[in-house]
Length: 87
Image (cartoon, rainbow, N blue to C red):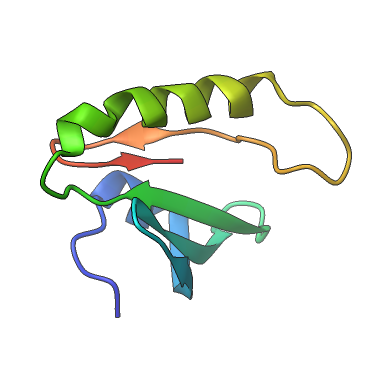
C-alpha cells in the first residue's frame, strides 16, 4: 500500500489505490469520508531537483484553481507537508 500519507489526508480520505505514476508524482484513487465521493489525489514526489520543480507545482495549482468547467478536473483542495504537495 501507499506509505507516508500525511494524517491530514488520511483523516479526510480513504486511500483506495494507485491510479498512475509519472516522473513528478503519483495519482491515488480515494474516497472522501464525509461525502463518500470518489476523488483523485495527486502528490508530487520529492526527487533530486524537487525544489527546482516547485514552479511546475505552483503553475498546476494556479491552473486547477481557475478551472470551472463540467467534465474537467476540479481542484477541491490542496495540502502540503514538509516534503510534498497533495492536490
